[in-house]
Image (cartoon, rainbow, N blue to C red):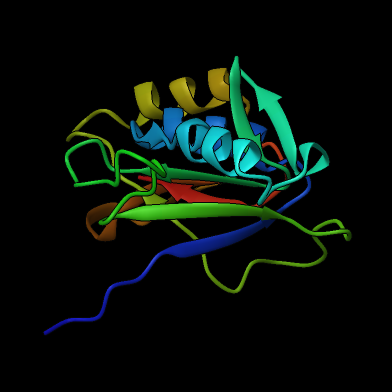
Length: 150
Protein backbone atom coordinates (compact mmCIF):
# COMPACT_ATOMS: atom_id res chain seq x y z
CA UNK A 1 0.00 0.00 0.00
CA UNK A 2 1.34 3.46 -0.88
CA UNK A 3 2.26 5.79 1.96
CA UNK A 4 0.22 8.82 2.87
CA UNK A 5 2.01 12.19 2.56
CA UNK A 6 1.60 15.95 2.48
CA UNK A 7 3.85 18.65 1.08
CA UNK A 8 5.06 21.16 3.69
CA UNK A 9 6.13 24.63 2.55
CA UNK A 10 8.05 27.04 4.78
CA UNK A 11 6.55 30.52 4.72
CA UNK A 12 6.55 33.92 6.37
CA UNK A 13 2.74 34.31 6.22
CA UNK A 14 1.14 30.86 6.15
CA UNK A 15 -2.52 31.95 5.83
CA UNK A 16 -1.81 34.32 2.94
CA UNK A 17 0.32 31.78 1.08
CA UNK A 18 -2.35 29.11 1.66
CA UNK A 19 -4.93 31.47 0.14
CA UNK A 20 -2.74 31.97 -2.94
CA UNK A 21 -2.09 28.25 -3.50
CA UNK A 22 -5.70 27.26 -2.79
CA UNK A 23 -6.84 29.68 -5.50
CA UNK A 24 -4.01 28.68 -7.87
CA UNK A 25 -4.72 24.94 -7.57
CA UNK A 26 -8.48 25.28 -7.00
CA UNK A 27 -8.07 23.58 -3.62
CA UNK A 28 -9.88 24.40 -0.36
CA UNK A 29 -8.29 26.16 2.59
CA UNK A 30 -8.65 23.88 5.60
CA UNK A 31 -10.86 25.22 8.39
CA UNK A 32 -9.60 24.18 11.85
CA UNK A 33 -11.88 26.63 13.69
CA UNK A 34 -14.12 23.93 15.27
CA UNK A 35 -11.07 22.13 16.68
CA UNK A 36 -9.56 25.39 17.88
CA UNK A 37 -12.81 26.32 19.67
CA UNK A 38 -12.82 22.95 21.45
CA UNK A 39 -9.17 23.25 22.46
CA UNK A 40 -9.65 26.82 23.74
CA UNK A 41 -12.77 25.86 25.72
CA UNK A 42 -10.97 22.91 27.31
CA UNK A 43 -7.96 25.05 28.23
CA UNK A 44 -5.64 22.99 25.98
CA UNK A 45 -4.76 25.96 23.78
CA UNK A 46 -3.89 29.55 24.67
CA UNK A 47 -5.40 32.52 22.84
CA UNK A 48 -1.94 33.68 21.70
CA UNK A 49 -1.61 30.45 19.68
CA UNK A 50 -4.60 31.48 17.56
CA UNK A 51 -5.03 34.07 14.81
CA UNK A 52 -8.07 35.09 12.85
CA UNK A 53 -7.84 35.04 9.06
CA UNK A 54 -10.75 35.61 6.68
CA UNK A 55 -13.19 35.43 9.60
CA UNK A 56 -11.97 32.02 10.84
CA UNK A 57 -9.73 30.95 13.68
CA UNK A 58 -6.42 29.40 12.64
CA UNK A 59 -3.40 28.06 14.46
CA UNK A 60 -0.76 30.80 14.52
CA UNK A 61 1.88 30.11 11.89
CA UNK A 62 0.09 27.27 10.12
CA UNK A 63 -2.42 26.87 7.31
CA UNK A 64 -3.34 23.95 5.10
CA UNK A 65 -5.08 23.39 1.80
CA UNK A 66 -6.67 20.22 0.48
CA UNK A 67 -8.08 18.87 -2.75
CA UNK A 68 -11.86 19.52 -2.73
CA UNK A 69 -12.73 15.95 -3.76
CA UNK A 70 -10.64 14.23 -1.08
CA UNK A 71 -11.97 13.19 2.35
CA UNK A 72 -11.28 15.35 5.39
CA UNK A 73 -11.86 15.30 9.13
CA UNK A 74 -14.90 17.51 9.78
CA UNK A 75 -13.71 18.41 13.30
CA UNK A 76 -10.13 19.43 12.52
CA UNK A 77 -10.66 20.37 8.87
CA UNK A 78 -7.50 18.41 8.01
CA UNK A 79 -7.52 16.73 4.61
CA UNK A 80 -6.93 13.00 4.33
CA UNK A 81 -5.72 13.09 0.75
CA UNK A 82 -3.86 15.53 -1.48
CA UNK A 83 -2.76 18.27 0.91
CA UNK A 84 -0.25 21.12 1.30
CA UNK A 85 0.66 22.57 4.71
CA UNK A 86 2.25 26.00 5.10
CA UNK A 87 4.28 26.69 8.23
CA UNK A 88 5.89 29.96 9.24
CA UNK A 89 9.64 30.01 9.81
CA UNK A 90 11.69 32.96 11.07
CA UNK A 91 13.95 33.26 8.04
CA UNK A 92 12.99 34.42 4.55
CA UNK A 93 13.46 32.21 1.51
CA UNK A 94 17.06 32.14 0.29
CA UNK A 95 18.22 30.56 -2.96
CA UNK A 96 16.46 28.43 -5.53
CA UNK A 97 13.86 25.83 -4.55
CA UNK A 98 15.06 22.23 -4.62
CA UNK A 99 11.47 21.08 -5.16
CA UNK A 100 8.73 22.87 -7.08
CA UNK A 101 5.14 22.50 -8.21
CA UNK A 102 4.13 22.27 -11.88
CA UNK A 103 0.67 23.70 -12.56
CA UNK A 104 -0.80 22.43 -15.84
CA UNK A 105 -3.31 24.21 -18.04
CA UNK A 106 -5.82 22.73 -20.40
CA UNK A 107 -4.41 22.26 -23.93
CA UNK A 108 -3.92 25.71 -25.45
CA UNK A 109 -4.66 27.42 -22.13
CA UNK A 110 -1.19 28.49 -20.97
CA UNK A 111 -1.74 32.22 -21.55
CA UNK A 112 -5.01 32.18 -19.59
CA UNK A 113 -3.41 30.16 -16.76
CA UNK A 114 -0.43 32.53 -16.49
CA UNK A 115 -2.74 35.56 -16.49
CA UNK A 116 -4.93 34.00 -13.77
CA UNK A 117 -1.89 33.18 -11.63
CA UNK A 118 -0.57 36.72 -12.05
CA UNK A 119 -3.97 38.03 -10.97
CA UNK A 120 -3.57 35.99 -7.76
CA UNK A 121 -0.13 37.50 -7.04
CA UNK A 122 2.36 35.33 -8.95
CA UNK A 123 5.08 36.85 -11.11
CA UNK A 124 6.64 35.63 -14.34
CA UNK A 125 10.35 34.80 -14.25
CA UNK A 126 11.26 33.14 -17.55
CA UNK A 127 9.48 31.57 -20.51
CA UNK A 128 10.65 28.32 -22.09
CA UNK A 129 9.46 27.11 -25.49
CA UNK A 130 11.00 23.76 -26.36
CA UNK A 131 8.70 23.08 -29.32
CA UNK A 132 7.30 19.55 -29.17
CA UNK A 133 8.90 18.96 -25.75
CA UNK A 134 6.84 21.67 -24.09
CA UNK A 135 6.11 25.33 -23.47
CA UNK A 136 6.07 26.71 -19.91
CA UNK A 137 6.74 29.65 -17.65
CA UNK A 138 8.84 29.63 -14.50
CA UNK A 139 6.92 31.80 -12.03
CA UNK A 140 7.15 32.86 -8.38
CA UNK A 141 4.40 32.77 -5.78
CA UNK A 142 3.91 35.83 -3.52
CA UNK A 143 6.75 34.69 -1.22
CA UNK A 144 9.19 34.03 -4.06
CA UNK A 145 8.86 30.23 -4.32
CA UNK A 146 9.45 29.12 -7.90
CA UNK A 147 6.93 26.98 -9.74
CA UNK A 148 6.17 26.17 -13.36
CA UNK A 149 3.03 26.89 -15.33
CA UNK A 150 2.61 24.81 -18.48
